[in-house]
Amino acid sequence: MTDLLVVSLGTTRGLRLADAELVDMLREAGATVAAVGTRIGLTNALRRAYPVNDVVEALAARRALAAGMRRFEPSALVLSTTTAALLIGDPDVPFAVWFDSPARLNRPGLASGPLHVLERRQLARARVLMPHSPGAVAALPVGAAPTVMISPPVPAPAPAPAGGAREPVVLAYAPDPKAKGLELLCAVWAQAALPGARLVIAGIPRVRALEFLARRGLRLPPGAELVGMLPQPLFHDLLSRARVFVSAAEWEDFGVAPLEAIDRGAALVCAPGGGPFPALAIARSLAPDFVAADRDPATVARALEAAFAADDAQLAAYRAAARAALEPFRPQRLVARLQEEVLPALLGR
Image 1 (tube, rainbow, N blue to C red):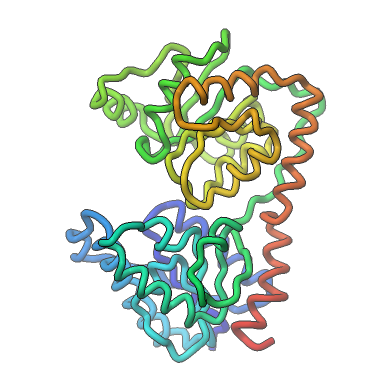
Image 2 (cartoon, rainbow, N blue to C red; image 1 turned 120 degrees about the vertical axis):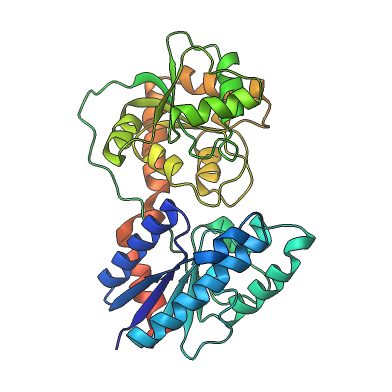
């Protein structure tokens, strides 16, 4: 018999990577763990918009759960995303839900009303909830189960070489050009007065980015370059050398890249966006001048200029405070919470 069965929705690369990290942490905490992923199958043709997408994915998660229960006979369940929990009803074993944001927050509107009802019921039935961030905790409905904050892990990077100079580079990550604000990024860059600096945009193929901009009658501004989807070591190396990481996202349910940026010493400049987005709250606490008051390109450009104007002493203090702010997201802290709070709730030990 297996202690835990993790049901991974796995509809994006980011979800699959995060779920694999969760499995590793649960095992390190002392549990035996099996994992199953969903297969959307022929119903994928129905996935055109929300809330239908959620229903299709929730049905796939229910099928994966049924197969996993038969195969592994787990003592308890961990369901990754609230979508995976929507249609499982009341299973015969205790369950936890691991999620970045509840649907009542990132699926607003009347059309998603039935989802909110299902979600509220399942979040109350759970033995324990594992939201990724304080913002996700704050967004939970009344009557939800007890919470233990368990985020995707942010491992501390290796110490930077002594005397390593930062390059005049602004790094951005925009795998989804609309959601991550590629149009705003380009408008900000066109207005920012940063002679000699470069804007490096990662995470999106060059052709796709240029087509997105062309549909809006725009071009890539001078001094900006598209480097595509980089291998993780290369992306981390850029974060360790860039002076600034800029986020123009309209919405962030979690946002690993901005957390990794401040962890590796880049100053985080943000346009305000919706969602729990823990890095935005951290950025405001570290340097309010680096966070724009609104999403107007001129306002964000001024925040970017402020980050470049900061002297070495200011940035050294900023980096030390950033490392302290990231302690709750460290793997060892997360494993300890799983071991001391989550596993006893699910397994009675």
